[in-house]
Image (cartoon, rainbow, N blue to C red; front, side, top):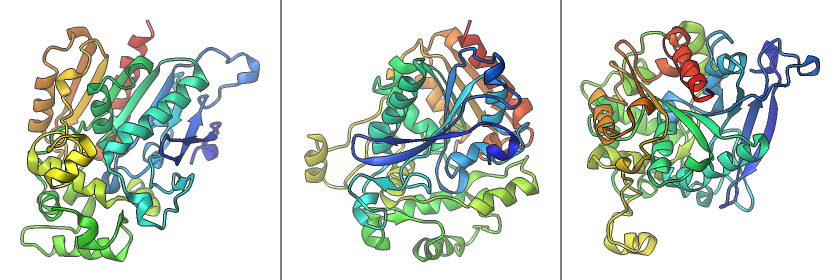
Length: 369
């Protein structure tokens, strides 16, 4: 997906503190750059972090359109050193020091572990490789794990700025009926209910689960992506075909339960084990600790872009997040509202370069002055 367009591409393996082996790709130069003929200027690093399942599968998310329309290529051509992350469980990151991905133990994690282990390991690796602070781009779940990290004071010493597309923090106003039904279904320990630890969209158990959701009155799953994300305005047919070719990636069932808890409870907190004693065992208290978005450093340069048609990153939930950031330094917070965009338009829309990506490049360029 990279080399065919004439860009250089390198692959690295990053091992987390809990033993997961993550694949990370690097596009160090733009198309037409010639490192041997003097294109040796120091390029600021940018780390791209994808979301989950139907809306953002793995690092391929950033490469689905042409080089003129895909964020990874746009950034490389704009003078940035681009790093593409792939979280645990996706096709490129199913290695582990001791566990096999076919066993339930491998899938015993939620997005808490992405905050605790995956992002820090990837940040440390890119920081060591480049010797520079990192610009970050997250989409969907990639925004949630970043915000949760920043709220705990993590990563900020290695971070230059962050651009958050379809920011997910609060999920209580999610408008898609399919998503609401799924969130209500994910009650308790779904590993017991489904009998699986891996939530694989291509597997029979998950297909049966989706079929049951789609059988509910008022749920239209003819376009499964739109039934979760809202009506995307700007995906062309070839982009959709490419997406379907590579298909949504697995996550853990525990991660799905955790996201459903956020929908039902309306707060951003660590995984709730469902009873007092289990929470005390893991957290030393009866209720899971909260990720307080108000603790995000006020001087951290942030760019937020959200859409008026987004059924997952609902406008009202983004406004709740922005209220948490109301004391943010005025010149450090850039907010963009795109009226016609839904969730997938930000990473696959054919107009995203003109509307969103050029604004991201301008935002990152300002941090270089």
